[in-house]
Every structure is written in C-alpha cells, then in structure tokens.
Length: 100
Image (cartoon, rainbow, N blue to C red):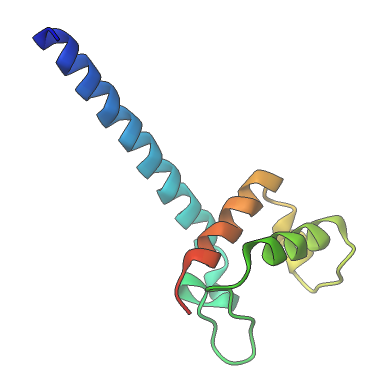
C-alpha cells in the first residue's frame, strides 16, 4: 500500500472514531437532562426511580408511553416529547449500560 493511501485510511479511521465519540458525548448530554430527578448516571436518590442498569426495552416502552400520553405523568410526558424516538432509545441504552 502506498504511503499516501495509508495516511488516507488512517485519517478516515480517526474521523470515524471521532464521529462515534461525538455520538456518545451527545447521548450523555441528552441523559444529563434526567439527572435532576433520576440522579447522575441514573442513580437516583430515595423517592425517584433509578434508571441505571434497568432493562432498555422497558425504559423505551415507558418513555414512549409518556410521549404518547398513555402513561400519566407530572412532567415526563413533556420531557419525552422533546426527543425523537431514536433519541429516547439511545438514552435508554445509555442508562441500561450504567452500573447500579
């Protein structure tokens, strides 16, 4: 492989890795909006639901139910409407991956 091609491949891999890291950081930013009630990294104080380590699919279903109005809430129905379905899935995956 020519030196120029090697550099192009290496540069493409770096840009790709940066894109993945940027997406991870974006999900963390979205999830940070949950910290006031559900704690940093989803570890809530007493009285609020802990999200860390919960089943991703169950969290997605709850969020979709809040968003559609099927599940009553004081504020979650408003918050969930501010995110796309894909964003809610990514946020749920983030909290599911956190240690309890």
